[in-house]
Image (cartoon, rainbow, N blue to C red; front, side, top):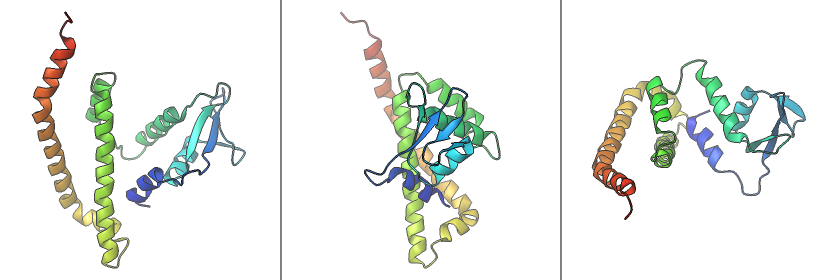
Length: 181
């Protein structure tokens, strides 16, 4: 299953489609109300990959725990196999968390993920036109240096844009920090 399918499925649920409810009990167990059975973090991951809309709620307080559980799934995935997040990236995320630019970084990361998925979708569409719908997946290993080069150029372009915005950020920071008269 390719990234575009996984990511797009998560964004394009039919309106009105019922969200699968997972309840978290005080014993930390997760209960899938649709299948009437307990579910593991790996089971949650499989539902997300399959594009099943889900919500995790505390069984007692009804507090929305979805984000927390998604972070646990990511943590579990990061501890096995090849990690997605480098230590430097994690340190940067920690440094930005709670800062004035946290919201901007969040939007930036989400938009970049969307741009990456759009890029992959375009390549897949070209593959379909050539008559091989799976061409993108098969050829990625052979074209990885070219794709990496394009991604590096994109990152460099983003870096230049942010550098051009630095004077604006400095001005805004000085304006916010200036004492009011």
